[in-house]
Length: 138
Ligand code: ATP
Ligand code: MG
Image (cartoon, rainbow, N blue to C red; front, side):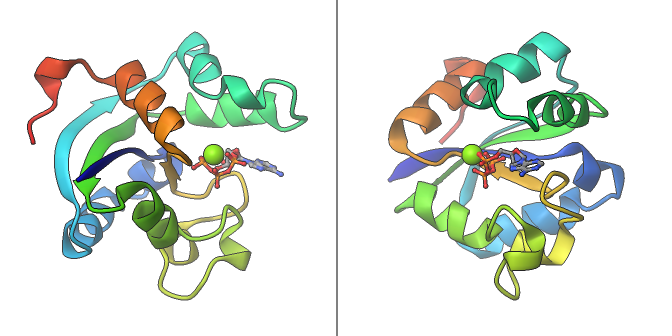
């Protein structure tokens, strides 16, 4: 079993899409082993997205991710990291495959409804950035 980290981003929470997204996550065979609603500070969002600090879209990305509460998740299943990336679809909703979460619920390349870890090392960093061991229940 593998763990990954996911976020339901502010645009999706704001539009009351969390329930639909959580239902889909469970239907696709993931177990939600950690879940909490949080409101990121600027510092916290910058730390989470530190790998993108030099990208031109970074200030906008931080502003967006701190524009409202998010739902942070630890998901578990076989091959969870890749399976969750596949279920989300491409970063840009316009390029995402039919039926993926970003295709269904994303607004644009920035406001794309969900986040997912992209590798085992980032999953480990991101889970520990948001959750302590007492908040995760396999
Ligand atoms: P995430 O890390 O959120 O799961 P991703 O791995 O598909 O998304 P990244 O390249 O890591 O994509 O970009 C992180 C986030 O930054 C994207 O999800 C999106 O919200 C935003 N972003 C990425 N590229 C752009 C861009 N060209 N313009 C505006 N925002 C962008
Ligand atoms: Mg990424």
